[in-house]
Image 1 (cartoon, helix red, strand yellow):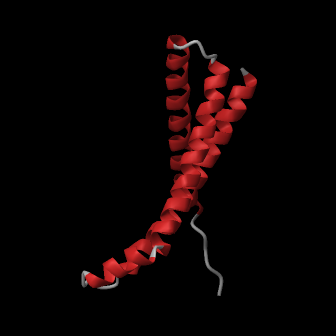
Image 2: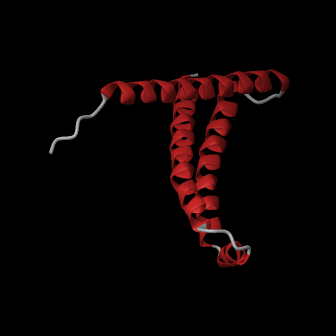
Length: 118
């Protein structure tokens, strides 16, 4: 049985993702440009630092999300409060943290490549 892929949905989601990426990159460039005017650091150096900071934030989100789910004390406390199916919400957060990491990694890489141009 063949499944049909709705390319319009994929295209619209990809366009939304690219718009978010462009907005993130533009905000970072504007902030680093303003900071470079008020500090003695160069624009290129600040862009490099900003790109590394953005990539680190994405990596830390994955590490923090996985540590929270693996923490036994946290899991014991969830079960003791009497919630029904407490791990379901935690497991749904893991793919979101990976998406955020990919988004931040791509935007940090693009910002770093832009810093190499200047």
